[in-house]
Length: 606
Image (cartoon, rainbow, N blue to C red):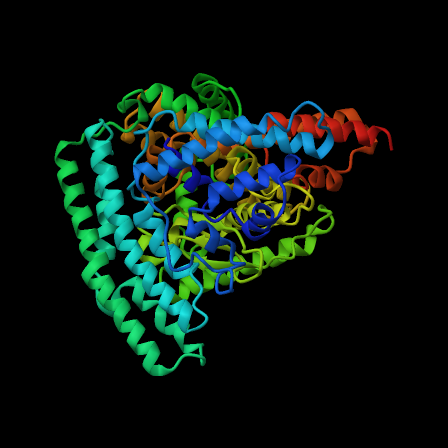
């Protein structure tokens, strides 16, 4: 996977501490491992105005040099980023690991693995689909502009208009990259092209005040009394003209290019279809699991977990009096029962989000009994934007800004509320909110006296592994399903979902499964709707290996807990174990194991 795609995937929305890094870079002498890693982190981020805005600390201040700009998406910019990475990795060896101990040694180990991973993942230049149905500039930047660019006064509104011009420039650069990828044998499968076209057409068909880049402005401007009405109208009209005359035409050109690609593409789903596809997938697995597990090992783990979870789901269904048919058919029956579903109307969507807030509040009432640190950052639950709901996953989490300008956000896809019956929503909430992503990522922001990288969450096996572990302890430790077998069925269905991911991801990319075979397998084993399964399988096609991180990470954390319980016996305290997992931030799983081993040793001395 290319450096630009890799860095964007891992860090967009997660680089939340750049201001402090900027101070260190410009004013502090880079002596010591912490300052060196801080300097490198800023070097990696400084050329991305989007990353700096996602932090929310220096926008609209005298230090604001970036919020009227967007990053470069050229091949040259990617090569420059890769050069910075390589030089940074060489320089890191001047600061360790010899002579380091404790947190400084941990910082060196995490940074070394991270830089090596980024470099390794950039070895194959034409290894991903820069434009697809779920990510990349054509999807991410409209939401970035509407959700993260803060409009607080006349100047920030003018900078928004400037960024609209920049967006047109970015699309032109991306189009060059797509052509270059095509010339080197990298073209998305036909079904990915078709879904990408759906999203791009939906965006470009809305012009003038109807386009999302414009329709979101009135509500923001209405709250501001420090801009004259004439200024508001003038800049809004300028924004409309830019969208209509520059942005939409660029979308239309990209649409034309993708229509051409569709003619020559094929239906093969796996990354094996690309030049050096096997090597690309092996690197993706290492990057996403932070282990050396092979595709075959991951596939077999998935099959084993699927079999175990299937038995547990069967027991619950029998207990509910549902004994006839396959597990799939019985779960499907439950999912379609009207009493379990919110109406697929605006009122129903509002009610569904209100229910999610209630579930999160109830969990938070139990949190201090199981966690030492309770994140102070708020959580907001929002609908996935309508313009991207057709190709978006069921939901996702966006971290809070450090300055409080934006809270943590859980976006739920509400295109069809039947995708998430009431009994499935608690586990969804525990994964994205407390004690899942919101706890883990917010806790990472609170870490003190460590490099910036330690405050980030660039290790998918850790972050997703924790969120899946959190789903489990809501059941085993917190007892939320003691009187709710349907809710526990929802938990197991979600765990089955993650176990199936191990099977289908490796099936698609290593064992050359077709898209349809993967869809059929996931639908059979999970009981999810056709639409939801299709969205998920097509996500795995464009993000090879990412879907394996959840279950591999969860299994590693459960193994560490079992190890700690065995070693400590009556001394084991789950609150302190969770603090040990979360208090040092995300890291590769092997490094996490060493960290927990050290914690176990410390606990024995108490």
